Length: 302
Image (cartoon, rainbow, N blue to C red; front, side, top):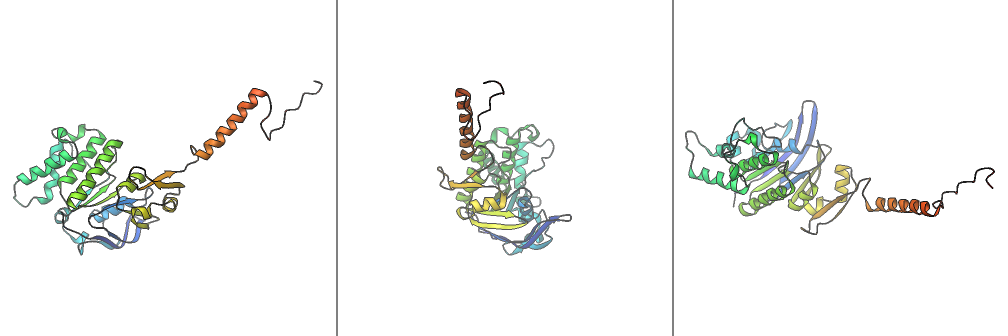
């Protein structure tokens, strides 16, 4: 089991240039749990993760890890406790999969220290967990988007931190690998007690895998708490501006969001089917549909 750590924000305000993205955010993340951050595009999800991991300095307020300000903690020291997989990591040109995953061990290397068997074991375990062992001698540049994403996740796992922040870790992955990655993170949480915080766009995957949800909207916190309490029709309407039905997922028992659009809804399809049936019947017997007058006979036809 990993050590228990507290990570929180206090009156946190973040932005870029003249634009404020998040303002006055007070938030405490549940230690040893899986928390998923949801919200519409450009609401500040990725910005919040960047600040929590020391990549973006606050305009006001602070991020606190175990009683210390994150932005006053040396980067390498912080990286031994907290890891981040950003949304669009930059791959060093020509680097192999093995070398990239091995970089996850950098925070654990002391000055003049040598690579150890423990480092080898951590890298091998990360490769195996992400099913990338057979790729380890290939250049990352040669890989598909999904393969690259799994390699970056392997690097984050090799870092072996007690807190792991992931910004859209299922990007570029097909559905089977999305589920595999989220299952992997759940295993990591349950076996090691790793605190997982991630951004997901898929509300149903978020609801299935999160112990707790954070919903951001309008530059601040809309709701936070247990998944069943946060994932509601009202939240979907308020945060995404979309009508929906929220039912029980028959597989997981968690909330399942059914979006309601302008097309392909049962009521709309029934109305369309009725209209088409009426028109077909009219074509068959020559009578006008209900509510539509019969055409008058031309003058002099009688």
